[in-house]
Every structure is written in C-alpha cells, then in structure tokens.
Amino acid sequence: MGIPFKFLHAADLHLDSPFRGLSRVPPAVRERLKESTFASLRQLLLLARREKVDFVVLSGDLYDAADRSLRAQLRMQRMLTELAEEGIQTFIVHGNHDPLDGWKAKLDWPGKVHIFDYGDPEPVPAYRRDGEMAAYVYGISYPRSSVTDNLAARYRVRPGAPFHLAVLHANVDGNANHDNYSPCKLSDLTAAGFDYWALGHIHDRRVLREYPHVVYPGNIQGRSIRETGPKGAYVVSVSETGSIELSFRDTADVLWHERIVTIDGAGREEELKARLLKAVDESRSESGGRPLVLRLRIEGRGELHGRLQREETAAEWLEELREWCGSPEDSDDWVWIDSLVVRTRAPLAEAAEGDEDGFLGVLTRLGREAAASGDGARELLEAAMDASMRQPKLREWCASRSDEEREELISRATELAASLLGEAGG
Image (cartoon, rainbow, N blue to C red; front, top):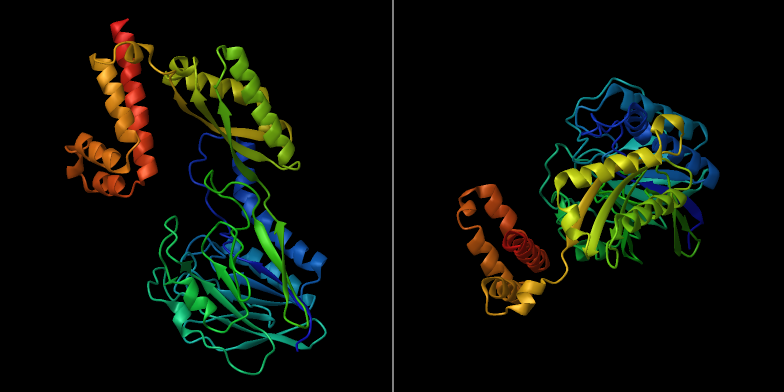
C-alpha cells in the first residue's frame, strides 16, 4: 500500500525550435511561432501549479539541438527554479536532440532537479510536497545523438518504494515516422516490473498499455503541418492502491490543422468558395481563440477537377483565402493558410466507357485493374520507374511505399493520362 500522489509527464519540448521555412510568412506569424515553444513551456509551469503536482517528469528532447541555445537554457532554468521554490521536484532525461555531449552553458540548477546520466539507471526517490516518499524514478540520458542499442534492457526495479517510474526516450516497436533510436519492444517494457513508463521521442500522444502504463505524451507544441491538433502533457494521478488516472492537458500556443474540402457534387467555383470558407470558419472555432496554421486539401471527384489542375489556379485560390482570413498583424487569433493542396479526381472518363476497345478504354481498364491489386500496382510502378530506379533515393522511396500508396499513385496517374488524352482528342 502506497500513498496518493500526482505528477506531470511531458516530453519533446524542443525549445527554441527554428521553424524552418518561415521566410515567406508574415512577421506576426513568424514571431509567434518562434516564441510558441517558450509559451508552451510557460503553460507547463502554470499547469503544474494549477494541478498541484508533486513532481514533474521530462522525457527527453527538452532542447531542439545538441548545441542548445543559451536562451532555451535560461528559460528552462527559470521554470525549474520556480517549480523548486514551490517544492516540486523535476526529473529529466536527455534524448537524441539534446544529448549529454552537446554544448551546455555553465548554469546553476536547483537542488530539486535531477538530470539522469548515461549508464545503468539507479533509483532516485520522488517525494510528495509534504515530504513523504511516493516513488522511485529511474532514467538514462543519451550520451550522444545517435543511440541504437536497447536502453530499456538496462532498467531494473529496486526494492524500497511503493511505485516505480521509468523515464526513457525511445522508439517502441519501430515507429516508422521517427528515427529508430533506443529501439525496444513493448514486451520489453511490460515485463520489466515498472508501474509506469514515461516515454518520449514520438510526437503523437499514445497510451501503448495500461497496468503497467506505457505512455507517450507527444510534444508540447506542434512544429509543422505534420504535427496537427492539441499538443501537451499528461497529469498522472496515482491512488494509494496504485490505480492510475491519466488526464491530458493541452499546452499548445499555436495550433496546426489540416482540413479536407471535397468537390463532390460541386460544378461551380462559387460552391467551392463556400466550402473553403466554411472549412476555415470551422477550424477557427475549434482553435479556442488561439492562432492557427491551416492546410487545406481539396479532394473528391467532380466537374471542377480539370479547372483546378493548373498550378496558377491553386495559387490564386490560396491568395484569395489568405485575403479573406485577414492580416495576422491585426489580431491575436489569426488564421494563416499555410498551403492549399489539390488532390482531386476527374469524373469517370466518358470516352473510356464509350470505347472500351480503344486506346483510352484499354488504358483506363488496365489502370483500374492494377490499382485494385497490390501486386499489380507494385509491378506497374516498378516498370514505370525502371529508368529512375538507378537513383538510390528514388529506389528507396519506391520500396518504402505501401500497397495503398502504390494503388493511389496508379489510380491518379491513370486518371491524369485519361484527362490529358481526352483534352488532346477534343
């Protein structure tokens, strides 16, 4: 039987992220994004105070680069000092972005901050604010940016505490969207005897297992259109019997969204305009008054497909949408349209349907048959890219496509060819 306690689990702060590719955005957008990781850090501090947590766990990549900026280190020092002044401990591991061999300013850190070194993890007591011991916390920091051995295998539970919490920056079960640093299997973690694995590295919020809990909180602030939706940390409440309650808290200062607009059933630009504006308004209302970076994807099949294929048409729609949204300089809850992506399809080719034995009909039929078969799509794509396969990066790209992606490529290529041939025949 233990005692009840509460802790905050966050990871992947990436303080002072450079947000590359912002040269063409308005100054208000650029400056807000550059400050967003620090604003989210401040939200973490306020969250810890508001929830009256007993301690904080930060699971790696606090900084965006090994040679971490002085500004980021000073902001982190300020936050940890304020936490310590309220009796809150902080436990830290460093990950691949901020390894131990990176540049560090010579700063004094509060006594209530424990930064784990590299090596076999030794237990460190975590205390409630009233001084009672709540748990043992274990952790390993990356000595360098690339760590490819299974660090999870080094963790061993030591007797002496009612609750055991392991902090680790790792890729569990080989998530393909992230570098395979400190690779391990979920079974490695669940069999190790810990009550909670406080993970970092994967920027999506995920609970991989309960009892024992294996948890990724995701990052605290989205940094690109690939990191959409709420971002933040978990408040973890542990009862005297060891039951665990997770509560996610959004700390993002700027949100990134992607929204799909379909051309299905739309034959006029006026209808598309209404749908685009509705998508913007819905995204704005969901942002909770925060700034929003939005990507719009135009999809579906319909009459507008041909008129959207010209590059200048998509650029004109994007320009007008930004105009309709207003200048980010004029408000704090701006919406900036990052991009407009056209992924529409043509109506089923009448020429192909009317002349099944003609060239266009045979092309369409073969394309559909290939797209409907994983093996067929793979063979056709490899044949079409035979000359390009001499380039290693293209060969690697092709090999990494899923059957679904190959089928989509074949389908779109077939429709584009049919559309171009139809225009030429007309």
